[in-house]
Length: 80
Image (cartoon, rainbow, N blue to C red; front, top):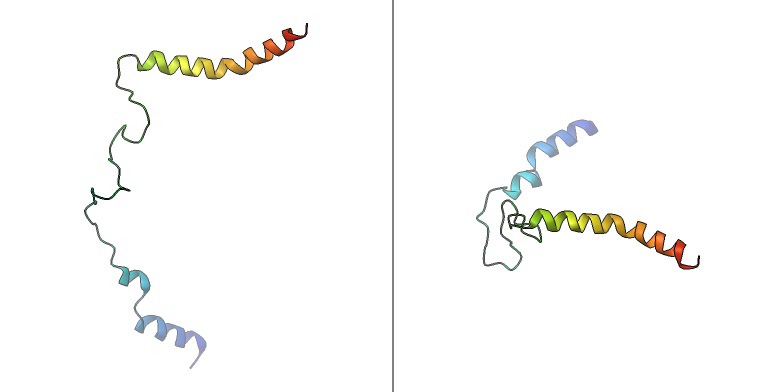
């Protein structure tokens, strides 16, 4: 027997591991401490549906963007 023929016979007689794993859909265990709620806006640490979200968002972005520039201006004027 050739090597190729033996490998074909071995592959056809032995069930593959993937076929034996039995992929199937199971119900989520909500009692598990590692399962979190799913759906839109459930995986972010803030609530974008609040009244002042847009103001707080743009304030946060402006402060984050402007801080390096403000620090650079302060450092250049500090010893001048």
